[in-house]
Image (cartoon, rainbow, N blue to C red; front, side):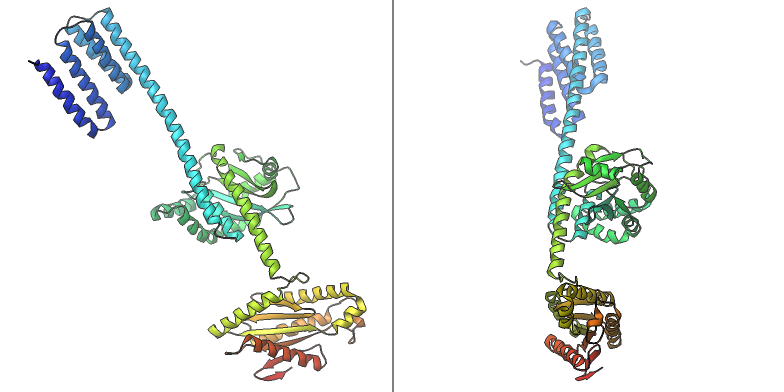
Length: 506
């Protein structure tokens, strides 16, 4: 026959084994200790000796390990009381119980240290995984555009978004084309704590991810008018040397400013303009060349800046530097492909494409479109008299007059040789004639080199004008303007002639 106490113990162990999978860790540990206590008591019913003392010690060890100091004290007191009741309390049993309690406490502390260490490593792995994810999203976003403005916004959004690196504000300064100054370019963030909290509440309520936040901050660029206006008014000479931006770029590493140095002109300017009390600077470099700097601060939550967090911006800044340089090269090549190399006006390729586009727009919207074709009078004579170098200077001078007069939404172009054209979408006939006459008069009065040697005693220009009408082709429009120009040439030069409604009039 199985003793009753063993049967009861077996049932307790079986029930505990089934129930423990549905309990929280605390209750799981408590149930395990109770099961062990039942087993020890069942075994000790047959008599109390050295084996029972060791079993009591194991129970104390388990409780101390599971519940730390309170568990150690409670279990030692409980087991000492039971040992005393059974008449076995002495130096040896008490020493076993105390040793078991101390050992359990030591094991518990070791476990806690390991858990803490594992937690630190897990947090580091989480941060690294998060930063890699951000870099991946930003890489995809950067590849979606070659426009410098959009690139800058994507980059700063990744730094400031809550789903990004999480800094409250980021400002970006870029080195100008001459490499002599840092110019404020774009910024994201709030001027005040209240604005920052409002923006972030909007993000949280809409449950945005980083990609959504990039789209939000593209709109925010236009809302942060005060911040961007202040930023773009700042120009910092690089060659003046002794300031914090120059230090970050020359040392090629991030710098955290925790206490302002008011003798540093840049630190003082950032503090006075943007109310910064603590900030970090991350240099932007591409193959050793200075591209710009990123400035970050936490003006909303005032979280202290740590180098570990600032270092997470470094790979983003490096990626941004390459993207910005590539974008600048792309935009420069795009400008060169549509710009006349001598005069800086749009070239014939641009003119032909834009004329087609504007004619379609005029037809669709029933809006006005004017075309002017200009030609310098006796330009061959000027070249033969003064040489081609002076001829080029004259072309540049005429181009400047046209560019200064044909402004706004209009397009001045060099057609070729000494011939210029201008497209004036939206201009009325009266406005077009006023612009043409202003150009003619300015050229006539301009003191070009040796203009007295020209047949008329001055350098002059003829302009033919035509207006687009519904159903007209671009070739017909050009032919009308050409006819007006040739009529001006035949009628004494230095004049504006208009081709309108099938007739030519001065």
